[in-house]
Length: 78
Image (cartoon, rainbow, N blue to C red; front, top):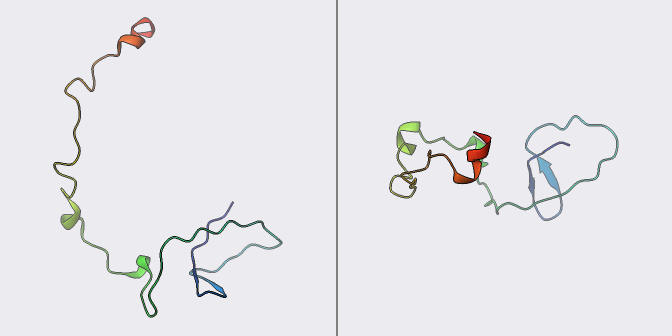
């Protein structure tokens, strides 16, 4: 199984990287999101520094106080 990213213009698929397979393959095509004309592919856009990403989920995730407590159902295995 191979994964290939490509741009589809309504007629043709243009791979974002060289494809080095030979022979015939069955393919499944999944359309992810539209790309504007002249837009830069997501991989080549400037990546945000880690310092900007740190804490972006703060207040959106919680963990139960007894998260690490033994489960009643598992006592016979412990």
